[in-house]
Length: 317
Image (tube, rainbow, N blue to C red; front, side, top):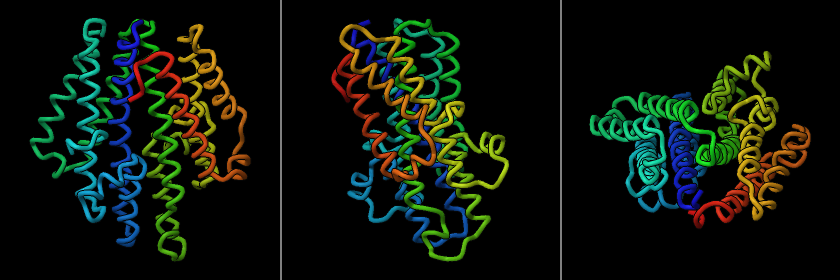
């Protein structure tokens, strides 16, 4: 497959996944802000959204403070923000259109329909009236797109590059959400007050829901939500679809299926990253320090992304 064609499939999937991940982050932040917490914590909550996406500098070049209205608008429909949901859906659609001749009709129609309907919804001011409805709709359309891809695409290189883009973007997002949320702590941590059990539960539950992990957590860990169990689930449990272990394992499989004579180093890099998660433990993670562990993981994932770009795609975007 030509590197240009592979690049379009890869980035179509990454941008679509990024739009969904942004919707997930905004929804959990919106719900967390409804807690009875201090103004300082609420603003810190919205700053966290910007930090996760590494958009703080761009945002504060225009806005003085991180308010719910401004951050949501910036992250959903700001045309100057390349990571806004609208920009991501547009970019995914443009990449899909570039390979329209080899893309299943159902995949194109799903993505194109999402773009057209999202513009209608934004013009109808659904973002101002009911932002959670828009966030849920984006997640639903993303699920639909993935289902159509799995159900209609030939299991060839195009499919493998599409799945590789999805898992790489998802792994990066899960690690960033965990890092920022754990650094900021729960509402009572930032306020320095006595532990509010209900607020503590709601905070961790919201974090888990942002990664579709709340129901899974309740099935696997029947006791109260604890930070240690949350880390185990979202980092090491390979049976949790959005965990780092699951995403990295799938990346390793996709890279192995695509390897050629020039990509041995990339295959080994993906395999080592997966092995460290597969045979790691929660005790080792906390002994290292969760922030340090996730920073190292993100650095290795970014390096892997650059290697994939050099070996298979056009120059890294």
